[in-house]
Length: 230
Image (cartoon, rainbow, N blue to C red):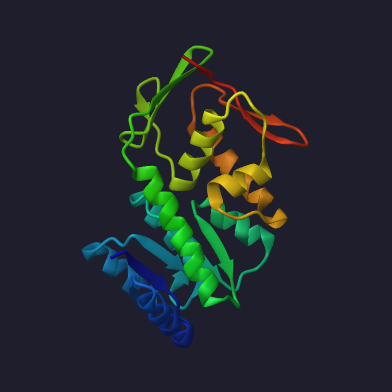
């Protein structure tokens, strides 16, 4: 049974989400403060963190950033009343896998969670695939057996979302890939307002995939993986 932490200071919302997730087959635990959630992490790390942003004892963005620094592969969904695009972009820059604004549908939340866990489980499935790509003087290895990406034998820490994007681009190289295709194939949804989220993920990925230049921007269209398969 997947364990989900919900950090939300509104009692009615928090208790409602906990109950709905429990009825949907998950083990859900709610926390009204960042400090109580932090204490819970010290004893047990969940399979998913659902994080509000505005909390009485701190900022949810800052807490999520610290969680990601320690548990890079932990999926995070922001559930917040902060609806500005800049806030949504910030959430994804911090490594969030999804961003849901209030008011929200509990049924939609569960569907998003189910889709997220399917993606995470698919990524962790053992296969016999190890791919190698060259870019100028650098070598990238994508090991789907161990869910590891190496550049010149150095491991690169990617979030689950970043891994899916890199793997999808590399698997379809040298084809041009639109933002809509990335949303549909890597995130199970396609809303125009989310296309900038793809740009944010690409920005984060490029910062990590050093040395070398692995992803090209095709202005007005999307992206293309520039590594050559060897």
